[in-house]
Amino acid sequence: MSRIFEWNPMYSVKVASLDRQHEKLFRIADELHEALGRAQGKTVVDSSLKKLIDYTMIHFTAEEALLRNAAYPELSAHVAEHRKLRSRIEGLREQYAKGDRDVPGRMMTFLLDWLKTHILNEDKQYGTFLNAKGFH
Image 1: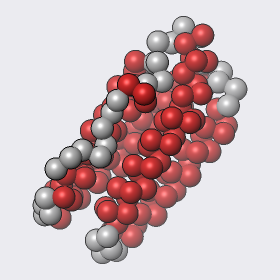
Image 2 (image 1 turned 90 degrees about the vertical axis):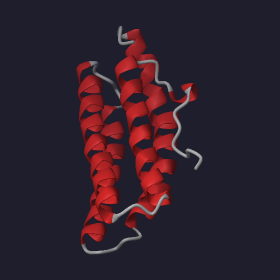
Image 3 (image 1 turned 120 degrees about the horizontal axis):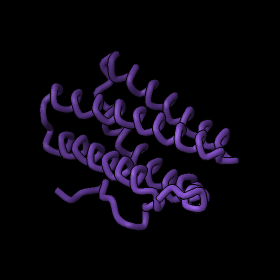
Image 4 (image 1 turned 45 degrees about the horizontal axis):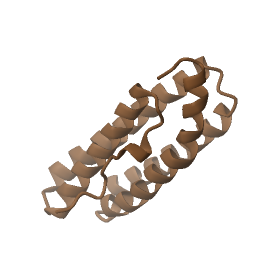
């Protein structure tokens, strides 16, 4: 099975700690994709989905803290984007908990688009700012 969530250098924001976190998000998303592709049991899919959601929240917290400490001028807009994703993920999690087994597939499509778009558009904007503040 080919990997649809594959990190490559074009996603780099030029801040090593955040790049590592983004790479991990791609790996976890790919694990979920593979579990779905192999029609693995509910337990594996549940575990992969939970891991992805939990790590996304950990990443957002770390990224927002770094941007806050650096006095990033677009922090409010960036946090608003994160809130939108959190809300969407929570809605999907609730649907899944109620028995909607199509949620992981919908989440895959949504996350693939969101991760790539968010990193390439919003996250890339803070890279230069953080580099100028001494974060690499």
